[in-house]
Image 1 (cartoon, one colour):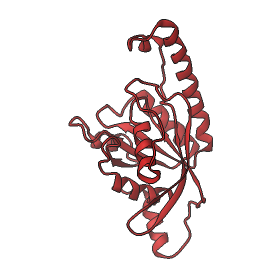
Image 2 (tube, helix red, strand yellow):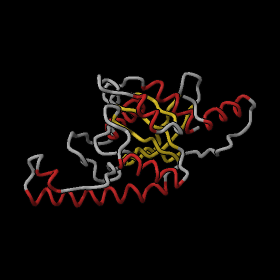
Image 3 (cartoon, rainbow, N blue to C red):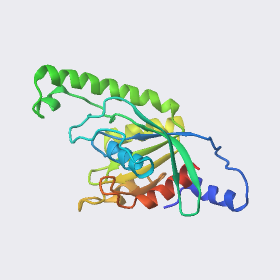
Length: 215
């Protein structure tokens, strides 16, 4: 699926013209999405592929990423020799409701659970604040889950209100329940790329699309 922006960029390149959407030397690219969608897994995959090192910790516990994590000067290239340099910003998962009881279910003591819930709430607030600094955003969604959720609509609504360019990564495509068509139907205004950040499935296409999207 081509977005209008991507189609216009290809036309401009073929005519030898500058990008209508502007080009910065170092783009600030944010990874956003609900908890456990695979943002940190994707961040690690990108960082390892191009820098040879991990970027963030990964956990099955929701809201494990509680602070903004940044990796500077990541340069990715495609088979045509085109490249883009960006600062990758891994953000805490955005949720419309955070309850300390959810952490209790994970075996935490009450005091620790309340502390984690407080940290997670702060992380959500920080994520929203950082949107104002983003040049572009990759929204990472779990392709095995219903995309028509309140939190997904909240995230997309915030991005649309700020007119931030968006690419959607339909993650966890290695799982049988994954359905990229539902995500494309839910957000037809954006380009969607199916990937598995965990196993590196379709990352070449993701990088090609990211260069078109951000370049």
